[in-house]
Image (cartoon, rainbow, N blue to C red; front, side, top):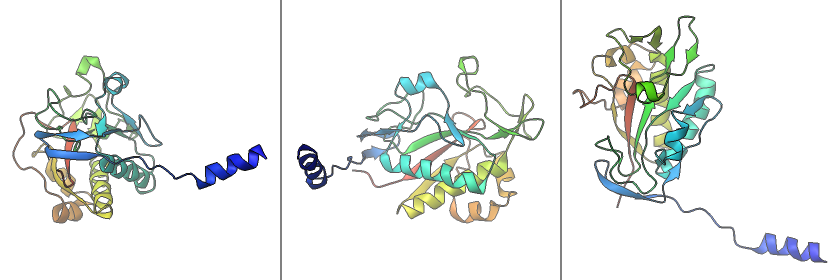
Amino acid sequence: MRVILLLLLITTSPVSHPKGSTCFGTTSDGRLEDGVQLPSKGENFIGYSIAARLAGRTYVHSVVRDIIVTSYKELETDQPGKVFKYAETGFKEGGRFKPHKTHMNGLSVDFMTPVINAEGESVHLPTNLLNRLGYDIEFDSNGVYDGLKIDYEALAAHIVALHKQSIKAGHDIWRVIFDPTLQPYLFKTTYGVYLKENIQFSKKRAWVRHDEHYHIDFSIPCE
């Protein structure tokens, strides 16, 4: 009888759904309510730093989290064998996020540039305290750094996957910031036409180069 009563309580109790995030203001002057943390890793991706994760630097808007995770899942099929790494996002409640000028309302995400090694294998860009969690890495004009070469095909595929999942969610990507001198290589990939027709790339050089990472701002309505 007790088991039956317990089952009745479980099946008749209202199901509680977690509250989604709410963003306020802009990426450079805003805040976030009920931010959610990105997963530390998945089948084909990892976060850039356990310490940064523990410091609360990997929170985003809940819709952005879903877009990112679903995109990585899509890439398991579209880019088999490729690995990806996300970087800085923001705090759970948003606000000033040093040293960044944006990342304030949960809609900004940095992704470390995917690379291949000398053997042609997809590997993670190294992120540690010696290179300021990867942000001090500098690629040359050919996209090469210490034996690693930018995997433009994987990078382009990732941006396309993020855009398609954003559209499916009823939203969009506002802009992508990636070193303008390296952007032409993206347009030479099999995703080049799609990128030109659907993605707004920043054409001016940002205050930091954005070669070892690419910054994406999602377009989601905020209060």
